[in-house]
Length: 137
Image (cartoon, rainbow, N blue to C red):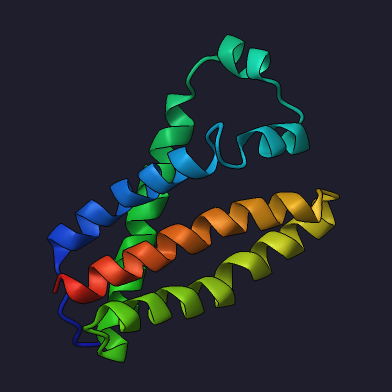
């Protein structure tokens, strides 16, 4: 196995950053209206459905796993600066997120714009995660 030093405090913090990015990204001043239209939701339907705790727990656990894997990549690449962490976040994102989102969207018949919006959210938080995980070691 790889001998990588990981700061678990940074790994535990990073998912909360992703939640913050998501709140801004999908908020009223972000892509919230566009995203809702693409998935067939309205402001009223979101309010009537209420908060889906399971979706938020899934997002947080997924972000925790992503943070751990990204921290491993940061360690393997030897990234220790802000710029290096951002690069690790970018290349990891490019290799896994838009490629998966576009393929899944194509087979599900979803709009490419939905994949772009969702992938953009992941890009921003993976850049921030990469920066945090590389600097805080």
